[in-house]
Image (cartoon, rainbow, N blue to C red; front, side):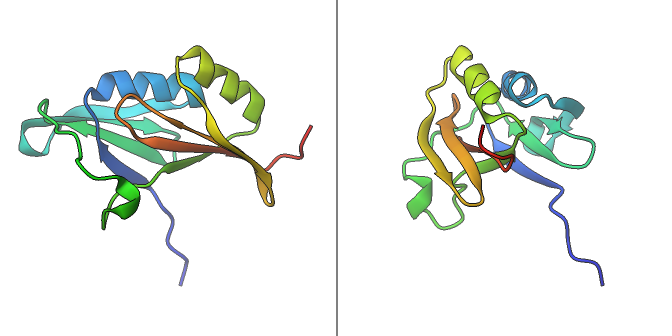
Length: 130
């Protein structure tokens, strides 16, 4: 039996097209599909040919009142592997986000940033340190 492979994760955002555009610019992804979704919502699938993030909204999303790390079922962060960590960090800064929690430990280098909806992204590179 073959092991399972993660295909996608679906998260609620305030503006799916805006979020998808930012993710395309930061990570070199493309929009795989977009259209109507559950409960009169709208979803954009943004990622690679094999894996993607589904960003969804009904247009009246509500902010969470509890931190995700203490909420059962909460999304703590989305991890994205890149080849050139420094280049992506420069894009993150240029886009107006503030990188934090830099780490250089096995098996790679990483940093985190929060997007406009408070979704934390971990950006990691397993390439050798330069």
